Amino acid sequence: MSLELSIIQYILDNNSEYGTNETELFDKISANYSCKAAVKAGDKLELKEMKHLINKLFQSNNPYFCPHGRPIIFNLTSNELDKRFERI
Image (cartoon, rainbow, N blue to C red; front, side, top):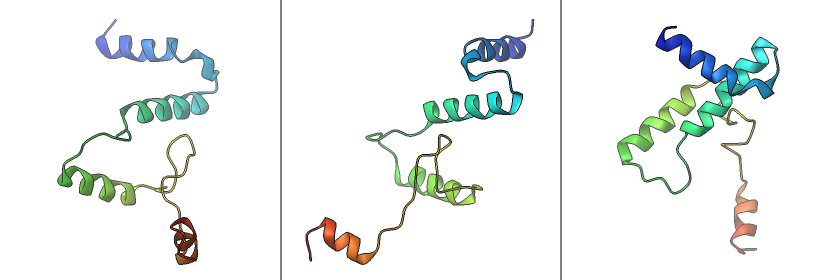
């Protein structure tokens, strides 16, 4: 078995809890590996890396949610900001 097939088989074997629907399986495995590879809170990044990530985010089809559906971007009105900083 080739290295590529071994890797694919490993991924499938270790993600069998996602079911047998091919699209659902692909989506859930992709989301899982995307999150594992993502920048985490507290990770140090260079300014160049930050700018690159922001540019890539806005080039994506859905920049508002992570692969698991959690919000990445949200709107706050000026009033909401004032309330959060006790300016009202």
